[in-house]
Image (tube, rainbow, N blue to C red; front, top):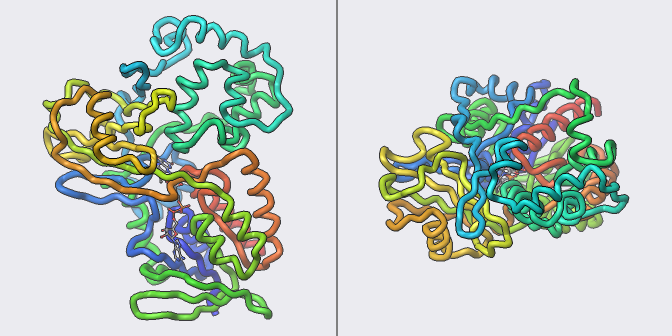
Length: 437
Ligand SMILES: Cc1cc2nc3c(=O)[nH]c(=O)nc-3n(C[C@H](O)[C@H](O)[C@H](O)COP(=O)(O)OP(=O)(O)OC[C@H]3O[C@@H](n4cnc5c(N)ncnc54)[C@H](O)[C@@H]3O)c2cc1C
């Protein structure tokens, strides 16, 4: 009988395993693919260093710091140069620099018209709403049409690659939402909130050889506590307590028993595994929507690109009706992402976008004439969970239903935030909660 089995070796499962193991618990982590990290995976191809999923994480929280130190990666942490603060929005066939501060925004930015800018001044006088709102409804009401569709929409694309008319403002932007609740206005909230609030670290980080260095280092740190190529295909709750699992690997099918079980698989996978144990819980999990996304990596000769690529990259409002959602100038962010004299672009596009469609759009937006010298494509059917209206209530029901099963927990990016840092925080919480059980 195992002490704790964790299913799923993405950053959520890895974090839970790390903090539990740090507390001296006996953990076994099962991962169906041949590598740890899930979507957090970096690899080299033809001299380019590619990120399959996340490119950076924001803020070195104490939990992440502890993990990175433990696996010996502190020296490999890197951050983009100050120029990466420059971000652009593509609108009306031009790249517009996003305002770096409010004064710059009012005086210089070409992104909004004067009426669009002046509309912002009404924000402190708009009454808070008592309804649950989408991101679109919240920002239309508070900041007006232009800001919503030109700035908020692409910003949301950059995190969720999602649709502002469906996503819940309370679930996706809890801090802004609570500023309205507490101070009656976002602007008043920013001005009035106590200065003692600890400042958030907004620094972006990666590792010299990409974010995938972290799961690789964790794999070494865990040693025999990790089984890769091991897919859990069946779960059963034992009457006397604990769980029975069926694990399929290259060697065949094995049965395991464990006192505690953590599912760190995507919601739709967890739903399938839990169907027999708790159909109601499985239904809640199955109803978490995900978007489809394609990540393209494209390499060009530097001299063929007129734009200096001096920044992070650019995002595209949906109103531009492009298939491309955003483009990261990966080789401007970090060294060694492309061979000498080449540049690497990472393009996020809507699911189902063909390489020809993407290429046509990106070449036109960046005014590139030459064809790429390097190309790679990764399609996600289920990329990022979409925190739509009602998501927080669903999270609550999931947490309540889980309480009916002693020794069972679920974690993952569909609970408590989609970012890498939030997944790590979830893992940390699980470490504490299983400790006191
Ligand atoms: C394209 C993309 C770009 C992103 N960019 C950023 C970014 O820049 N910054 C940021 O902070 N976040 C970003 N994110 C979000 C963040 O990376 C993810 O939310 C996070 O990595 C998800 O981790 P996870 O462990 O919850 O899920 P996953 O990474 O999906 O891991 C789940 C794991 O479970 C395994 N598994 C599934 N079923 C079974 C089974 N039956 N048995 C055993 N194993 C199983 C899978 O193989 C997988 O390894 C991005 C996400 C994507 C997709």
